Image 1: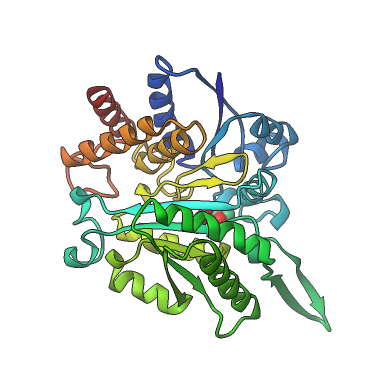
Image 2: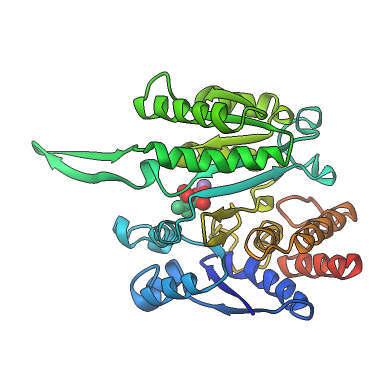
Length: 355
Ligand code: IPM
Ligand code: MN
């Protein structure tokens, strides 16, 4: 029996994971899977006073995969850093050693008009971001806001060891081999020593182990421009934690909406799956969120944690079909849009039809 832990979290997290539950329940007839739900993020703070309890972390470690909704919201923004909902997410990633965050950004042909860029530019875009997730400036020590000579000073540290760079680079190269065989690595080697190390290690792994893959390096500022100028020429983008966070939102917009982008965070053992979008407090509780990113994240869970590639492919095709048939949620459509749960139902119908 495979165990999935579902952590809906906050805001629209609950609504979008509900749609995933429909899909999981559907597949329970063919696969041995069971799931439990628990509190996470702000929802956990409200009940337990912390975003990730030891019990929930333990359950995550015992599960075969973790499916997340989203965390955060204005209600918890004033809390001290260590107690914020986001801290729960970062701790979960770190504790589960999910060092490679995979964020595929593919333009569904049916949605080509939903992007803010011209059709001719986004056409054919299929970018796979591999973001380092358990290091870099997100975790570097020391970190503080403190008073020095009566003035406040804040600091965070951008630190990478060569092993941390090498292991995520290998993931990017391996993925590229199964795609269009090209990796673009992002850094700021012209200014930051740590980023020079990033570039050197990526180049070294490339020449020692992945010579067959094409490798480019871009400075992050230039990359931010190139990604909107010539998106369809990118294949795999490899980046550190912060640059990867930023570039993946940019890639999301190419695909029409942040509501479309799924992600998988993997390491040597555990897998965490979550939509790239956040908790969207402005639309929470209205049943208008787009559940596609969450459903595609569940698809990735089937592939990367349960090795059920055929279910992953089926879910992707069902989403495509649903979009081709003209169904839209509010973020990607103009009139006659579906609610979150209606979109979930339409996708489920197509899953059933295609299976
Ligand atoms: C993401 C989010 C998170 C991050 C936040 C919520 C901590 O923006 O997954 O991209 O910065 O990693
Ligand atoms: Mn982000």
